[in-house]
Image 1 (spheres, rainbow, N blue to C red):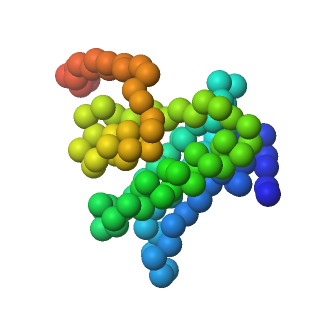
Image 2 (image 1 turned 90 degrees about the vertical axis):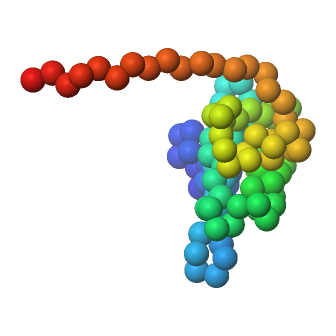
Length: 108
């Protein structure tokens, strides 16, 4: 397994469908425990359970490294169904954060 600083390629996985990338999951180890940095499934492969498989694989890997707490961040308004995938895997919301923004006119 290749490791460089905090980068551990043993926690990064890609799901292929032939020669096309269907999805990926990138795990990480943080001071607070295991963390799923990225879980992505391309649009054409969504709704088939691939996200759940990738998530569960990442969770198992992080648990095998001794982590008892695994986190991830998600947009609460996500329309892809990601939140349901996380809840079905037994994850729960532990914190919500609001971000505010204001667009300002360009200055010349």
